[in-house]
Length: 222
Image 1 (tube, one colour):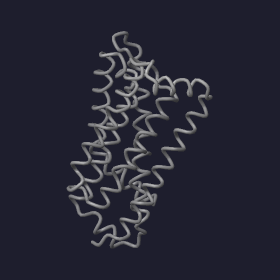
Image 2: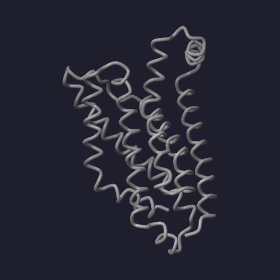
Image 3: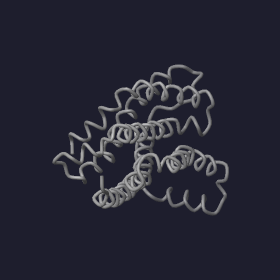
């Protein structure tokens, strides 16, 4: 499986510069804008990069008929599936580290309304990316890259703008019964427990999705 993960990371070399450039672009736009978008810069940037990772890898496999070649080798199909999921997380974690360095540099310019990356940003970003992968990959393994493209864009917009609009709505409507209840519950719960619960929930959903994808992929014929 580690060889397959390395393959997933290796094919991203050509898009690495573009992804870094896109992250810089997002930081500049969100940093100059301020408000909830600036607060969510690390999360939205990492989700965008994860989306491009998924698209690049799946498009590469479809264009080069990689699945046919890979399945002719003595490799377990479950490892092919797992490489997609864990490759996405590893690449996103690496890019998130790069964005943390970029954010630290931009902090020295007063024009940018950014904050240094926090543990919360890392947890939320990787949790959202886990859910993004969990929702998309079963459809990819079932339908293939071309037939799942329409779903891809819907999933991207949901996970790219959803967290920002959600936090923005909560900030502007603190008296809403649901928002107020959530804030009250979070205020009474230790932060480490909230973070642990978020990570555990996202990981559980991703593992369930991975099991579904493995079952789908085992039944496919090439």
